[in-house]
Amino acid sequence: MKRTAVLLLPRLSVLLLALAAGAGAQAMSIRELRTLEATEKEGKAYASYYLVGVLEGLREGVESSQRNGQKPLFCVEGRRLEPSMARSLYQTELSRNADSYEADMPVQLVMSGALRNSYRCTR
Image 1 (cartoon, rainbow, N blue to C red):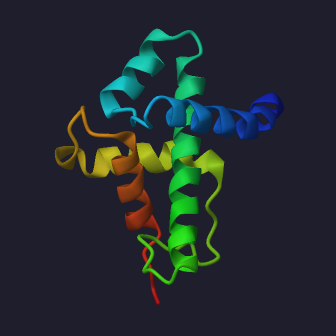
Image 2 (spheres, rainbow, N blue to C red; image 1 turned 180 degrees about the vertical axis):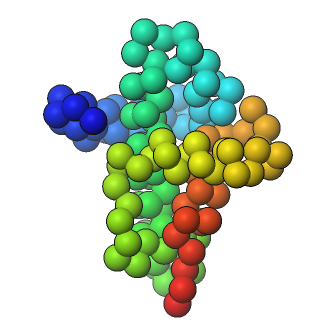
């Protein structure tokens, strides 16, 4: 990602979180994400930022559950997991398990599956 995009990521995450809280936290569907990418001038960038936010939200959720003594859905366990990997994880999960996902399912479901499959817990 370009340097300016990297600098915008923390601000965008906060903005997306605020928008989600104000809008009843409705998740974007696979169809909506595809439409955003195809119709907006900066759609691909916006979609990438959204995927990064979903990735970071899921990771924070898992870390929070671990702090509360619950079993995590996925385990990073010192392996590399960076925001720049969000799109690749998402697209790989969609292509590997295309029959499992319908267009109206939430993007979070796909990302969660991607993280569970790529970062399996070994302990």
